[in-house]
Image 1 (spheres, rainbow, N blue to C red):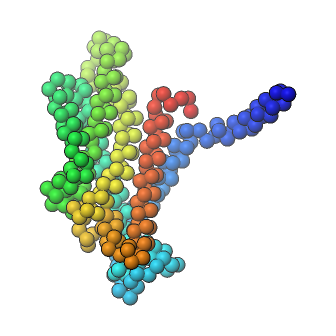
Image 2 (cartoon, rainbow, N blue to C red):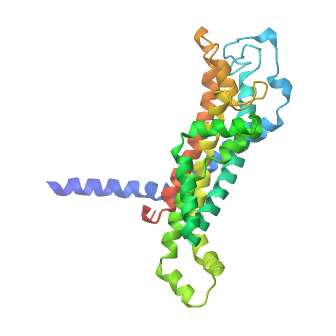
Image 3 (cartoon, helix red, strand yellow):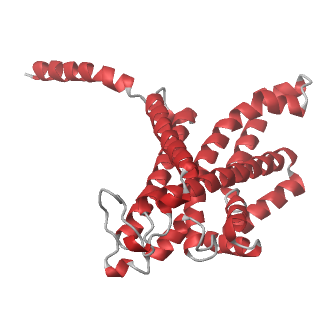
Amino acid sequence: MNQPTNIFWNQKETEDQPIDIFWNRRRKTFLSIGIALLYLITMLLVGLLLRPESYGVNYNAKFIPPCLKHPFGTDYMGRDMFFRSVKVLSNSIVIGILASIVSSLVALIFGVVAAMKGGPIDGLVNWCVDLCMGIPHIILLILISFMFGRGGKGVMIAVALTHWPELTRLVRAEVLQIRSSQYVQASYRMGKTKFQVAKSHMFPQVLPVFLVGVVLLFPHAIMHEAAITFLGFGFSAEVPAIGVILSESMKHIASGKWWMAVFPGIMLLLAVLLFDLVGENLKRLLNPNSGNE
């Protein structure tokens, strides 16, 4: 009685196997990267090429709900929320990319130097990491942004200087593990210099951790840029920014103007989720313990 059931399930598993083989983790990762890059590049290019007239002031079109002419509606100054959302998202993407690159480079340098030098330098780097992680992130962002005069400059510096500690710890731990391995010690005994060992053995091993860290820093960067601008410590009101839009919408959302906050928030959330998905897939793909997919 059990034999037909086993045959049935074996046939079903055999039929489903080509689908499982085709949609393996590698292809899912490449697909998610392609979708995220397409969304990022599209929003970036369209936002940079938009004419100011498309999201300019038009008092004759105030508070129009979403319709065919204005898919995201208009705000209290008659500005088209669709084009304005695309413009502010492109600005956030630029800030997120620059801030994540700077922050990840700082983390790479600090992590490698701390692990290779050790001693007082390692202690100093760990002290800086503990200091930055001991202060609430949003407060540290506000203090740095305010210290550098707020605006685009203050926001970018604040985001870039506050996202390196966690990645620094990961890079340092990875370098320490590689440095104590047998093949690295054998390379030193064979007369290889520290630079040659770092180039041949350490850099290829640290690169996956670094790339995943860069990708995962991006959504944090744009979310924190929006947060400090929303609180009034980032971009000024006349600059197109996602935090400015969300802050303005809070004044009118109680009167039923829900579209002023919902659609820009969805576009920001979509960008964050896409790159978070890319980072998680890359982390599972590059992790040696993730299996043979």
